[in-house]
Length: 592
Image (tube, rainbow, N blue to C red):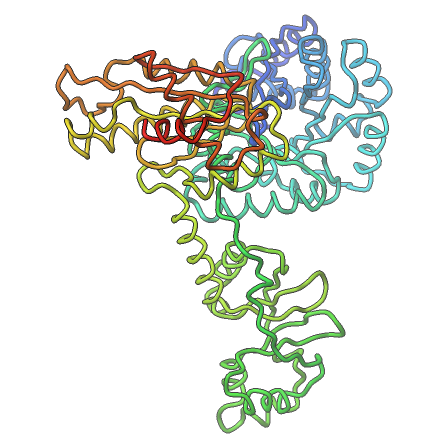
């Protein structure tokens, strides 16, 4: 009998068999469900069914119980019983669009214990459609016959079921399973989550799997997310969905993604969207000579000898890039007493090294990453740029890095240095995008009341601290929104906010919760107790003012803000119908 693990080893084989049979015969199992959330919206994709046997210790642990069931040759029956229990328990509880993820061993599929038609009838009887059931292929042992497994998976797919490969990157054949079975979902093993924030190897593997998944039409689910930092890292790397204690623990009833996780998801995605838009690598291309794969080394050497500025030559096999020959390498090969006699007649295909190819539409940032992730001897080689399948030219690594640096400098100019929020240029760009579909959006203007008086009395350092704390209040209120909230820093203590009508009241409430604290503007507690600071926020439906130019828009919002300030205290007022102010009143409104 195979080992059951240290705790289960304390039980006799007979006692373990009795316990397993008792759970099977009585259905003594609890089914919990853990949410799987979208890493772009924070919405629930579905739930994984997790079974917990009601058995005496140590068999109350699922791992120990399944080990005991395997030792008793009852694993298939337990696996099947738990799968049916999950459908019966959760089928009626899930929302109409949510998926149910159920573990399924390859043995269960091959044995015929689970057939497409019978399982289809079962899930429909419990209120589910097969299209909402995802069978997670686990690896209690490696798949030995992929031809057979492909036929079985195809039959289940024909019945409507979806498939996932569980624990990708951990099992003996999980990566082969992905290639052979083309699942709908790829679930990354939890060991990849450990130190993902800074472990370059793990990050590279996750990014590679995410890129591969997009090419084959699969979506990536990350398991084991337990911290905010891990969640942010997986969003940056392009994972589609996540699962783990930070998003939600296993519960008897379906529960939403945690509020903290949703805030983190919204914040991380906003930062990704606000990343600078960079130029195409195709804009940095340098035209370089090409040679055919059979060109002899001596003729190849002549290209470099005739042009002392030539850095590289691309070797083509027909129209396909075969490799690249750099100036340094060809001179190294041809140098010395025997260099030319040995290599002069060798074809270019044997003298070149593999080229790193990037598409012309790629960003310099993406291309620079590809260049720097190469092995050390190749990191200085130019990259080959393709326009579709056609050679466009090469791009030098130092030019890529210069382009990335230039984009970062340009982006920094568009962000307010105090708050890190988009400045006037980005505000104008966002409002122009909103003009195309203004319905449902509200535009808000926010600032601090009598801020000049506060600044003069308390000093610029405390004034800057108050502006920064107010910007954090706006950002935190935006993180709980269902739709993207845009926050721009006009300058000084003035902010522009674009918020969807669905999120207007939650945004207002979130702002008030913090502004109601007496000392929100004094995080270090250094100001006298009699110092106070309040905020005014005024807004209107963007649809009513979308036809105005930027200066007119600013003036009408400033006039609305002036009306709000008369109320005193923290004020948040929406004006459903605002008329553009007259030229005379505009200057007064802007002065306020």
